[in-house]
Length: 464
Image (cartoon, rainbow, N blue to C red):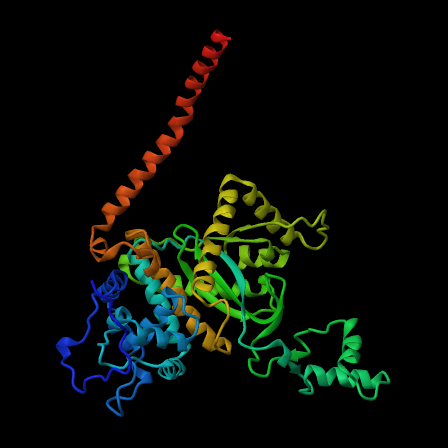
């Protein structure tokens, strides 16, 4: 076989037949996702929900709602963080074009179309799409709703810490330090002078005094890796039986867990109630009765509110605070002791272990591999729109993880198209059989090795 050379300066033909255009066989994951969405009427639901935001027969057609929400699903499944990246990825991929319903000769929506559509469609409609996906999970038997685990994580804001200004005067950080240095007797402060003034000053990063001019909703906070950033706080309510995300809320990063938990519980109750309106979903669901939390949610007033006002059986990890005094706090004492008895039981310990597995898994998929750990949008409303659809994509992945054992397109790499058409329940049965066989061999080998070792030892003793 002779070696070919790469052509340079090749002139494309002016006219190309449609039949000669390259075609893609599609991606088995996105084909199944389209079938699932079509089965439950996703496009019809999204068009009805978004009808009020579009003019009737006036102007050129804009991005259809079904395409817009599918592109946000792509952001989760492909791990693309920005709308600009989603637009580039869909324009470049033939399989994603097929998923959206665009041919090779058609132009896919760019990032400006995505941002305009996001601004046009309100937050309640994005919440309705999230609730619709939650109802699909309930119909598939993947949402129970009786026990929810709740936890929060921080998202880095799209704002620089060096750009913060005073809330009262609007001064930048350097201008404020210059004023302090001049007040201490330095006429022309240098960077070194500003550092000396700022070194031992208390409350230098208080959110009460400082704000970001580009994103007023961002708050100065310490991230989990120890760095200080402007950030937001996302809180999840996760079904402890299936791992489905029942609610997502976005709040100020400077607010404590005991303050934000009530809003998340209210959002979870509303979403679960919406999902339970469907008769097919209701037969799998149970009323919300129990909540599992980490030690950040442990507080006397918070526990009283959760147990008495919310009517929940709480399983809250208790920090070591030493001996406490209960004068004039009998209601808090009762709530804390009842919670302590529950978390020490067998069920309480099992739920604590499961909380760390399921809730943290949702954070890892939505924010780490899903690409939303650092936000590219500003303002809680804009960011929450993206988070809701992102979490809805995570919930859809649970259906595929149950059916085919893979929840993302990358998980199907190497299986091939013919393998993608194989009966997935048979895959799962074969995999389960292989796991059982491996466990049996692992259990049997040590038992076979013991008599053999004894026989070799006796032979050595006899020949000695």
